[in-house]
Amino acid sequence: MTQWLTTQGFRTEGVNAVGADGLTPLLRAAAETNVDALREIIAEGGDLHAETRDGNNAVWLACKQDSVEVIDLLSAAGANLHHRNPDGSTALIYAASAGKTAVVTLLLALGADPLQENVDGFSALDLASNIECLQVLRVASRQRRDRLKAEGMVET
Image (cartoon, rainbow, N blue to C red; front, side, top):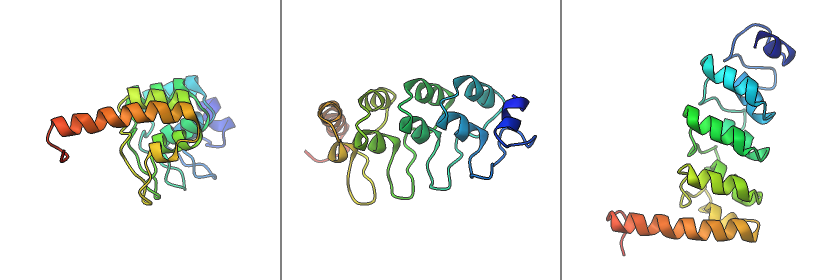
């Protein structure tokens, strides 16, 4: 692990160091889809709530790389799937807008909320960029609304 940290420019500050680019080792490993390094960083106490300078978390970075394996690993470790960046966007909103159907499907299976909206009032369904994401999100959004109605959380 120390060698990987050093080659990534973290010298010996440890798993929660911040590099010149503002990334922690956990964020860098997620962005590079380096599963082995990510497992070690998590095991050594890497901060699952770290954010990039843009306010995105490791789940978002894994979504950008279309890495369902990294997303699954981060989720199992306790990373926040509902994290909102300063624009109010979640990883699910990003994945839908980028047409990453496998990622959208996984995030929904892991409990991501399809009804969350960004600061402009757009949900993942509103921003879905391909028909596959649109279809998956329509079903998930309908099911979520039905659950909320059944629980008395929204008016019928």
